[in-house]
Image (cartoon, rainbow, N blue to C red; front, side, top):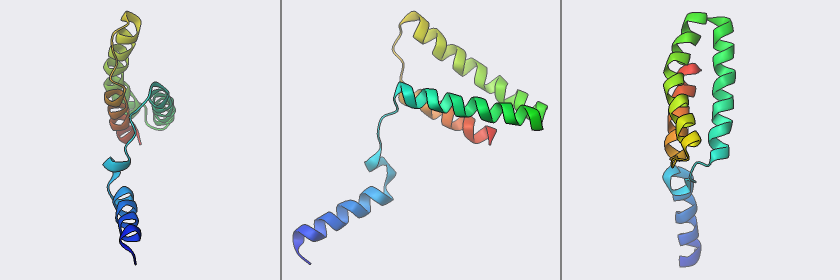
Length: 94
């Protein structure tokens, strides 16, 4: 195996095994998709277990209100942070 082929194999292996190397920044569209997914999960949870669904909603509301306030006021939004928050809520709702 040539040096060039070896380097390609190493880079591909690293990209597949280390998610941070293949990380792409979260966009507003990504955050909106996560918000939709979260909403669907919460609705399903509310139908199945209202108390558990309400608990997730209570955690979700301040985050969504803070993000809405930033968007309304024209403030800068850290979409990576928003996606991270939504990912944590999605995990809790599942």
